[in-house]
Image (cartoon, rainbow, N blue to C red; front, side, top):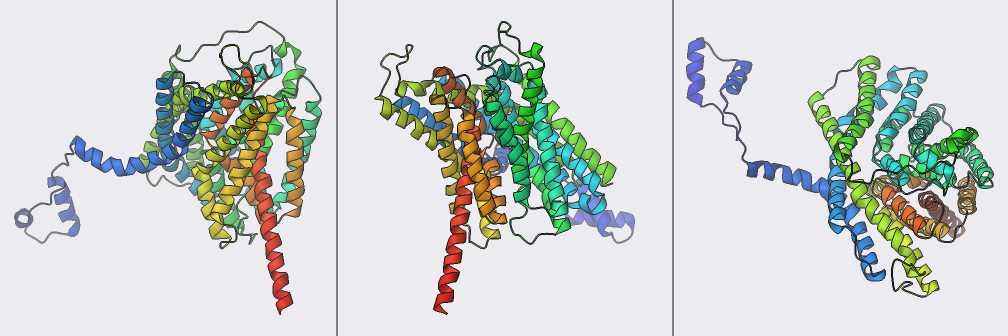
Length: 567
């Protein structure tokens, strides 16, 4: 602990100066003669434990219950042990540690930039500059999303012979795929900021975005070479709205909304995440069309062997990938801060600390992703068919009669979706915000359960699509058309809330786990691909929350009508 200089030392120092000491002289003398603090290992442990444990427990609550459920279902219901259990546990530990560090790094390293830009730029810069910054920020934030790495991991499970175009997008054109998604997010953020500046209704923007997206989806669904790409395209919309993109773009959006102050709607700040989940599917579908027109890229050439996990310098490669994702985004934010806003960094050391642990956290997360979440999800997905069908590699299958086995698989899928959503920290925070903004009219638990029920139902429908080889368009188009009709009938604030709910539910834990489960299931039942579960899990909460909003509106009207009759 720090020790103050004794009073006698001050007197002797004062006598040498032959005058009274000023406050600054006392402080300077005290600092120069203060003993250096020496902390033992146990002191460091006691200081850091309360700080780290709270943040680590947040990740434990999001990951461990879901992992235990998957392991218990596989062990007790499917009668199969967890293969490579030690590696899976180690991977899950890396995932939780990496997420803890990454979220803390984003909070201290990136958010101060974004909050300052969001608050000051609308007041000091013309609209063109604000929109340009919003576009570039949205695009660059996509590269730093932890779950974006799940796309590259998913590509390792596919064979060119099953779907040549899908294979090309995930292998030869993977950089173009991520770039298309990033451009889609950038355009979405630009349009979202323009909406705040112009006071546009989110309903109008949803209709103008969704109609061409659904039209292109319907057209591609009837083209055999394009149909497998639809699941990937719509899943990309769920992958983009993660812990980097959402807070960064919301900080700018809230700043612009506060600066314009054109709406008195308490939920008008919502909606920007919605557009960030709708534009990427359209961008990926257009990319697929462009790649297919270049016929040389989709030629049926022999498969190239992939390097299995563990046969490469995983940590070094992941670390370089993390640096390439985060450092350009940080440099861009710093240039805006210094070049346009002309402001110095208030706490540069803390910001540097945040960036370092964000890079470290992303590295650990990406490393644990392949060995933990993806491996666990792939195992569960691959074993699900043993519940209702005979598998040559597993004697004793099927474990249950066909109807009962199918029911168990769909129940499992719905519980995974429901449980993953309940554990999502961002949804709980969103529920508290909504309850406060609506003065209790839309309660936190009501929102959480409505969103979780929608995700559970959507996940089950996505698994049914793979099991029964149902074209994704046959499920996706009716779902979004229903959501579109309910959007037109709903009040603006519930539209903002419902469509943003879909983005909040797909976090960095849910995305790779569900994606790997779908791909493993697709391999087991010899489906062409395992994409589409995330797409259905995104449309489900939109319908469920809009339904709750319509019900609340109906009850409100009924109550006012009854009051009128009593009067």
